[in-house]
Image 1 (tube, rainbow, N blue to C red):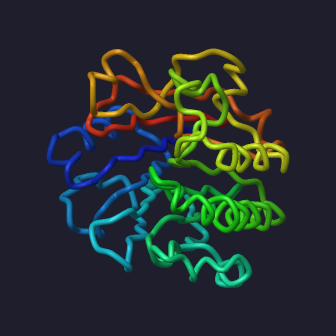
Image 2 (cartoon, helix red, strand yellow):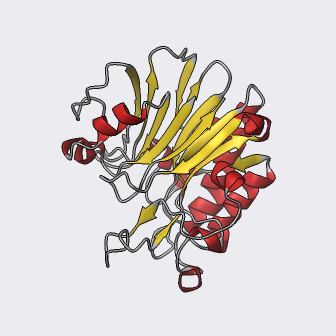
Length: 268
């Protein structure tokens, strides 16, 4: 089974560039998870008859954030859950964010398949002035992790998405210059530490434990992508019990159309 995650930075734009549908038809993922769709279902003409579409679009602000999952029609989908559970939102006071309730921004979708849950997530950005760092560190990250652990009690979990943080110094080209900046603060990196401590495995680093140059996002400035001056902020995490079934984890930097590139895993 092949699963792909991609922050498309606007599904309408990447479809209009004639990149999205050819990419899906070439790769034929069983499950395709998207982030930052910036649209509602039907706002882009997507000709993929072999797939069922599920969307979680922002209700707080149109054309903002949003996630989606495309799944092959021959797979049995038992349930699709939009957003974080209400009890966790209340527990971690997510509704009280000064920017607006992040749970109304279409940031999380969980899909229950036969053997595991698959979750796509678009984690709130801490903002260049770090004005949303507290939300990220004290509210969103712990709520999301508790949700993953809750689902895992039922069956194994794989979750993916733009988590808006580079975990280690190997995960961005210029770490020293970015220490303390949004996307590379101690608080944001701690969120990934806690995910790993809870027993989830960073699939890419499972196969490639060390080394720079493996990035999934590049600034649009200074020809950063061509020079591969980037950050690895898009991930696939899997429950530890699924690791024996994990056969590959790849970054696909050759796929254009967004400032992020897709990332994939394969499970036997």
